[in-house]
Image (cartoon, one colour):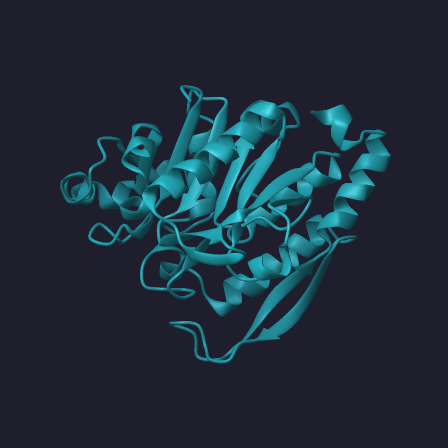
Length: 279
């Protein structure tokens, strides 16, 4: 796995690294925490609180979206500087599950090791992008994996393919994962999303991380931006949750519905490539 980097993007959570605490210790050999220049004073705190030697901070001059902490800019900055072919971006507030007897149960560290090894295996086999299923909706898929579908929170990429097509991770301040996933699908590259394992958060928009800059207005702008970039496959709509996200005044937000498979079929037909031809 010398050609792999696992990058946990974080902000405002020097004392609360949930993902890091749930990883198998051996994965830490490939794991980097990525913080921002204005958190430089917390650099030692991150290292002291967690068994990780590699903490990077992104200089503010590389921000293209004009606010501190933007994870889209951070991903693009990392991807263009890391000397690895494969990269897995991971949110910092995740717990992991594994399927046992047809049900999701809390994953132990051995199972998280197996989950990340599967991601790496599929990248090495030729998939340009991979992901672990979100816990939400995992029970609607019986297979161990599904191709050409939604990816979020744990997403891996073959950077050779990404930069061959001059793609970036920061065209949007939010929903950038959706943007690059759609871009690759539209080029005829299927992703592989693993449903044998899953990731989940304690709650949406929890303190720290993206919640420090994510607002209803920014979500609306990102949704409309994603539609403009991929109008054939994105529908902007209002969604209602049972209660408001933390920090939001309303339980109604602007979000998107995406036709992932349709985007891949478009790309496959346009490039005259099938899954077997791309692997």
